[in-house]
Length: 325
Image (spheres, rainbow, N blue to C red):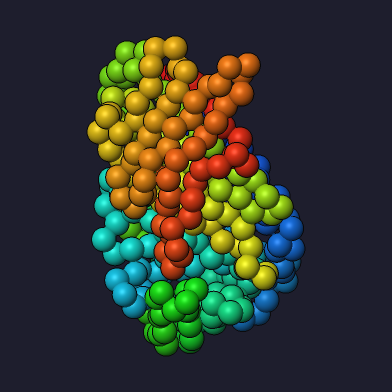
């Protein structure tokens, strides 16, 4: 379970770095419950894709390939965790969506072997084309303890089909790399690092202009989260997590908009949001007499391969507060 704990933490950190610590901690905790319920436990490395018994080598094989209908796939693996991150090719730093599929597999310096059941499979062997070189792939961060990257190609079989066939990918050979040791933070979806990252050297706006709203609907091993953050500009983030059979799914949507897309008042009695695409509609969190809160409106998010998902209703637990550094 520790491998999946690390994977989901990486995924959340990659997409939500706007000092939404409270929401982050809650999402990670719930995601861990999801993975535990999915029975995705650690597996020993085998001869096909790993090191010899007793000599486990922790590595991260990773490669990208194109899917149909304008999607990109990032396949990466670590320990017994294999992920297929699917993102739109037209994602930008200001708006985008992705879904990451998580499965149990056998991983090592020689390849990746994982069954994604109804979504496909990854069964590839790595062939190095150059000696290990100090440094990381260009979309990775960290690696302060001397990470190395081995360039090469993966040969075998990669098959993937998203829900309803929204994107399909098949290949027998694809360029990629193996990173070791994996002390870095590499994105789980194609397209690079954090799309909502703030400049750590930028001056913060006045405290009375900083606001955070979040709404969480947790049901069983799945749930929905929406977070809005205002700090000079407005940032919006939605996440849906759950399982389909034995496969974990983590879908994300994000957008950055002008300050006017998140309105409130000095008493923090209400918060109204109307984010840009990929969100639609608007919603208002209002404090009622007696301390109760209502979260109503037409706000929805569209994740890859899915219809629009409503992000409002009485089942959501909500919070609205002034933000602090």
